Image 1 (cartoon, rainbow, N blue to C red):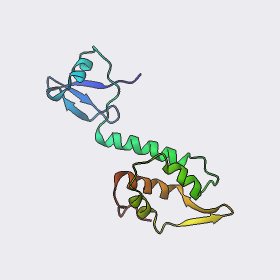
Image 2: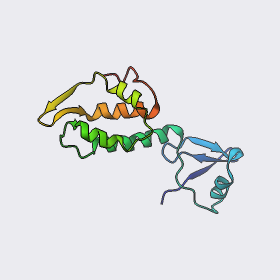
Image 3: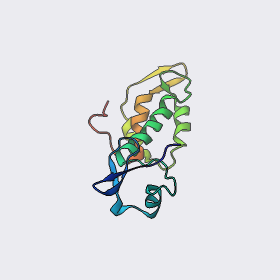
Image 4: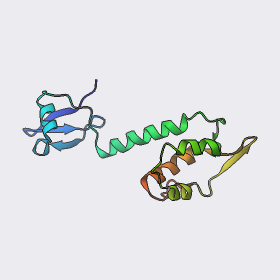
Length: 138
């Protein structure tokens, strides 16, 4: 089992990100649980910095979108998208729909197909309650 990473930092303990090893916090600011784990009295699960937490969450989201069992290998039909969105009840649908506006799509015998990449980006916008960035614009 992976666990939190503690190191000495100038004579003071440091809790490191389990992914990138950046210092998350130092002994001066440890919680009681962190102190117990640093001393080896309890096990603390892996800890992550904000950047790695975000990357980890979005990797899970990306996997879900790209590995979703769609009827078409090219992307989502509307009914599949509606089913996927049920997993995100707190999403800002206005931001999601704005991100989907004007995307390139294709049509097959089952109807309109929305590409995986567009669904992924729109989900990020809806979850983060934001508009597309210039880099994301299609």
